[in-house]
Image (cartoon, rainbow, N blue to C red):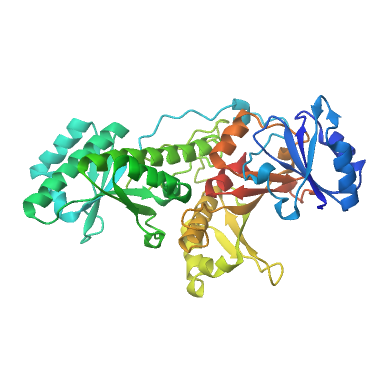
Length: 473
């Protein structure tokens, strides 16, 4: 049996001192940390000094009535002690004290923003660009007029390339209508010039959204293929570069079916984008003035980047006179991935450091057979966002995670000890929304002594957006 137990159904209003006193009755508590869940009550993982103490605690505490709540206690196998109930990796940062004035917790809901129409980006063969534009721009003007859209043909980018990007800015319906007209023009041009039997639809989508489009074990993508009677392929991760974060989604089928597939694909991409923006909106003071294009959420050519969420507390964006606050974050990566992050002769880590404007160092292994290594990233929030995003991307690119597996890492960040509070707290509405969006497990170890800056370490286990959103709650 393990020395570790999980106690559930703890009254949210209970003070930590009361719980500590109760646990101490059965032995020496080595560690007690809160695991946040979507329940109205609190959950903690407790480690006793020996197995006999753990056995006593389970016998006495299981079913114990505490402020009209019957406690539920169970053993945790050692290797699962970091995981939440039912081995789930869900969790949110529970309010363990009164919420700070002006924080999203007191607002009770994320800041409402104007819906952002993200562009539909197509990749078209260069030889058809002339036909799409038409004589003196007549054809493209007609498309924009009929579909109430704005269309940018990126002719000057990638001179000599076999394909050019087209960005369509409109409502989802407008984008789809313009897409159909462009497909019809290309099909007619291919037939007239006898250059191709069929012209596939190629959609460009940011790599951050593609995993969710594919879905677990490829289910989402298979469903789109079946529902629309099309064949869909997605370009390899190896084609991505630091400056080209987009993947090409190629759809083959009749024009009618390709258009149906476009609607389904873009619906998934928009949902993924909205979830990411909503996750950041919940932290509307997260990174004041953050430019989503600058951190690589969208290619710079896109005009659909939304304005940054305004801060609930009314803080102004960073000004050039006030350097942004430096943060140090520890990201734990698989030990065998160190070479890929450093790159040949240190080229990749240097390039990454320059790109993000952050200091990036890899700490020596704690033991010779350590399975993880710690990457120490120092820089302001925007630099953290860039550096961590690229590290997550690199691990996926180098196949340290399966093609259908989301990259989840453990991240440590320091927060003011006062933010940890003294009341256990409960999973409230905002917490539920936050964890549904980020699917992260957040653990605040309670046995920590604050450092000289009165800060403690918070552990986050989750995907990239979770690691960005949660710490600044």
